[in-house]
Length: 91
Image (tube, rainbow, N blue to C red; front, side, top):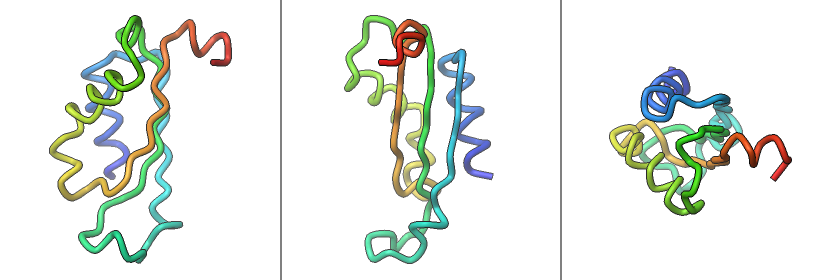
């Protein structure tokens, strides 16, 4: 469920060419740093709106969009944020 909410929020914010959310929560269940619960997610997003932005700025924008989910639903988030040209060249 949370992965679908993440996808919807990111689609609305960035209109990406590609978006993939991988829920890795099962492999992290019960570890000591995850007392509140929340899932572990890996996001790949390719969007024109990242053009000209540093990797740090791209991540900041994604965290802003997902801010409310970061409080409880998301415990860990790995991000691969690319522009279309970076994705087509394999960078």
